[in-house]
Length: 115
Image (cartoon, rainbow, N blue to C red; front, side, top):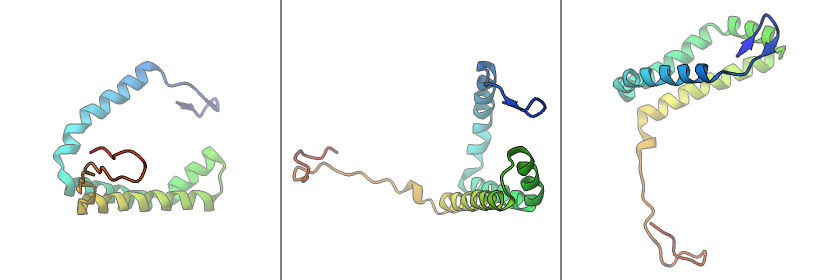
């Protein structure tokens, strides 16, 4: 946890970790109920909202980190790009293309490759 008033970083307590995990577990059913299309929309919406408040976010991050505006602009651009890329992957379902590598007794590494 960051205490911006004292300028120091405190360790996260076990209770804070437990609360964070509990909040994530509580949110999981609603997130799952959205389905792939809803989760993709949420990711895209998040990226759009970050982009819409870029100036404010970058100014805040500059104040907290002292990193350059150019660096933070790039980091935000990378983040929103990745959110949109994840949304596209969720939409197209490519991550669901499960494949099984079957056993291969002729595997050239010296031992048969297991299933």
